[in-house]
Image (spheres, rainbow, N blue to C red):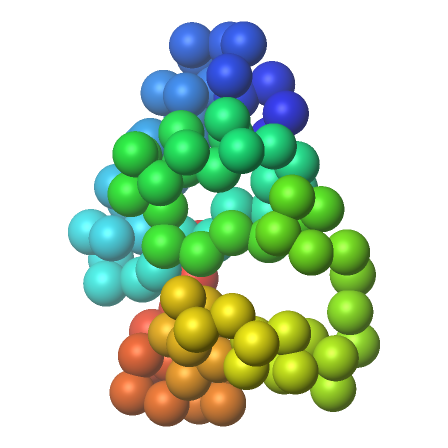
Length: 92
């Protein structure tokens, strides 16, 4: 994901994948987010969920749940992980 900000072709590919996921009723999940610049770009492209070192170091399930509880802006992700209504559908 780090090349996203340097390669316009990569932006086109990611935007297409996000649009495809949404067109199929799925959420788009980006992996490997390592900078605020990439995070912002993905948000602008409509990506639904991100993961990577910029967000948090790798965590086991118990610590990930605790992290989500400490970050109110991530409550939607916690509901998805617990299989709530927003967990319906897949991810791309």
